[in-house]
Length: 292
Figure (cartoon, one colour):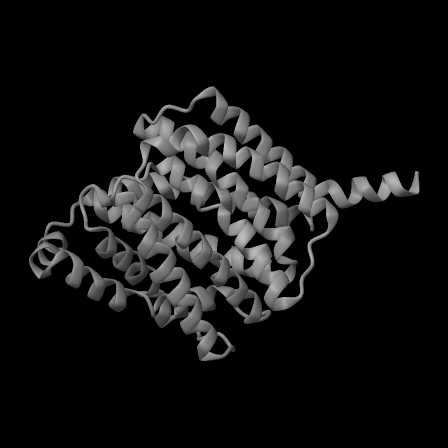
């Protein structure tokens, strides 16, 4: 994987990590599904007027829009609104790494190498260390919602990979068109028309700023780059970079939200970085060991 691609993957991970802080702030003032719908409205307009539809099948656009926009973010925003800590959410969502590798192996025949398996197990240990002391502070329902959201992200990764080497900016923009109306409809059903209408009438600068961050750097830029990387490299190589997301999420939550990072979380974060290093450089190291 070229250095420029590695740096792009790291940048995407930190953009996503900070997005959990923004979500936490946003759902404090706006119903979660309304916030998610606005995210994709901003991601679609006005970009869709200038970005041509990618040369891929509609089923890939619809599937990606459903699993990423409705399933992943609908569940994630709702879970955070129900009390899931931003730092813990940023961690649990990285189960998508393992879901993606699993789905890629089962559906696409991609077999992870030994170094990727070892790196994944090491990173998994780091995830467990970070999650363990926080599980008692969050309810089972939002926790399980976040796990299902991570699985939906894994499916979305596979769909973007199956779409092939296409214009990934166009893919993200046009697939985002599928999300706003279903999300808004779900919010009308769950929250009621009065609350939805009031939230849309009372949008303030803070909420609009949160939506803008979630729409542009987080959705259009980050997911376009992520899908572009997945179209050029095996899923088992790309997805472990998302293990850096909880590192950024925990640091951002501590700084902006006052969520305290415990020593065991710092240790877990270091172990995650070690697992990522094994995944990136393990093949080179193991290859040298075999030839020595």
